Length: 125
Image (cartoon, rainbow, N blue to C red; front, side, top):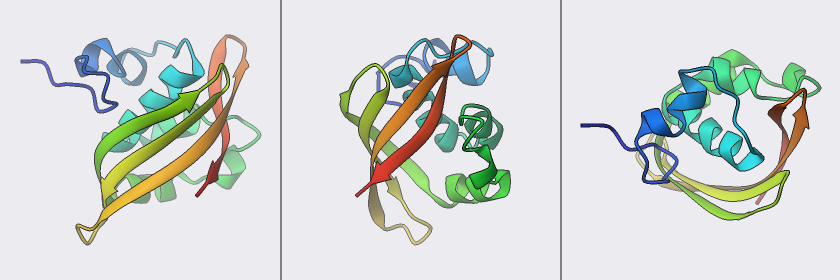
């Protein structure tokens, strides 16, 4: 039985975000990259999260901090609110380390460079 992808497309993980997280394929759109980054949090893949962050922003992130955030929360659901070619507005639902339900809202900006998409930054509510 194939496990469903964490990003809520309804597709099996290996046919969805697994293509990018495990098979080293490049996400073809900003939306696909955003979904795969959510799945990376759910699977505690800090390397992927750093690799898909735009090089100009990487100095502001630490693998240790990313891993701490990813592992201290239980990722429940991703809801895509809106998207354009290079932006994605979403809500990520999770349980924090105390088991309390939380919602992370973000309006993310992405940039395509050398045929690859990268996360640049996000506005939070």
